[in-house]
Amino acid sequence: MGVVGLNGNGAGSSTVVAPLSNFVWDGEEFVIDGFGAVRPHSAIPANIRNQTYICDPEKKLAEEVPHWLCFTQRQADRLVPREKVNIFLVALWIAVPTKTNVRVRFEFQSDDAVPDVTCHHDRFHWTRGHPEDRAETAHLQQVSEYIPRLRRIYLANRRLRNALHLTFAGCISIHWQVAYICYSAAAEAILAYAKDRIGHRLSMAFACLTKRTKEDRDAAYREFLRLYYVRSDIMHGRAAQRSDYDTSQRELAKLTDVLRELWQAVLASPVAVEELERDDDYRREFLERLQEGYEGPRISTR
Image 1: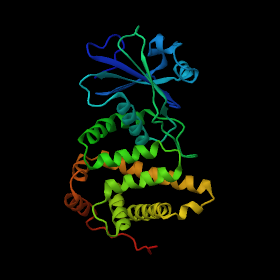
Image 2 (image 1 turned 90 degrees about the vertical axis):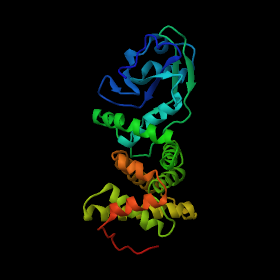
Image 3 (image 1 turned 30 degrees about the horizontal axis):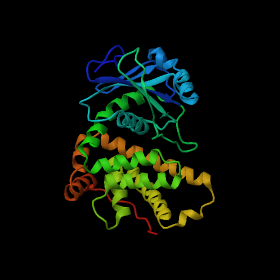
Image 4 (image 1 turned 180 degrees about the vertical axis):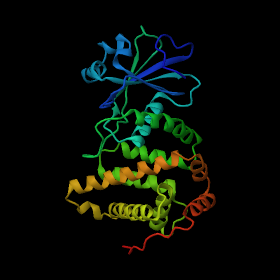
């Protein structure tokens, strides 16, 4: 699929456009094959850019936001517009954590039609001090690779879809503890295959999926296990005593990067996706093959 057409969509189809708030990119247009495109403000029909039929905040967005997400919606599509927008946002988050979010979307049949307006309530939030200021074209190239793989995971409705749901829930949470639990649960949904020694098993799997050398794996193991203990503090009420908000935000930012790195490693490997979607026995065999020859560092348990 090339650039999304805005001059007629054919029977049974419509065009969806959504202003990308806080999306900073130096390019003009980026086509995501088989999905849609990021297009400049000037490419959006004037009846949306100059509309008078929505409230002032959304009107301001439509007038000022420089880049829009655009795609064609067909009756046969298995994803609805909200799901497509959210998959784009998750893919962008995996590639680079920014402040990008979508607050409203428009759907119309032709350039001169009055579009349907829908508030997008699943708004992404960011961790203070963590997001990057801008996206680069290289990040959008990653997004174009991630979207079809995330779409397949979502539609397959198997084990990794749960991890995707939990990742998304963390992205839209405004409370750091909720986001932390969702992100750690998402990592567990990707990596777990047994209940015993869960912290060790998750740390081993993460280290060997994302790193290659002994030194890098040891560092990844230690950091994952440390962050997993913060999850335990939250689950058992110990984190409620924390008074240092900045420290909590830093911990959340570190876990965010761990989960993003984990998704990057999984999405880069069709074999990993296939094996991690299977039952515990197959998942165990896959991860044990990956970990063969690696001994994790000795760490005292809490």
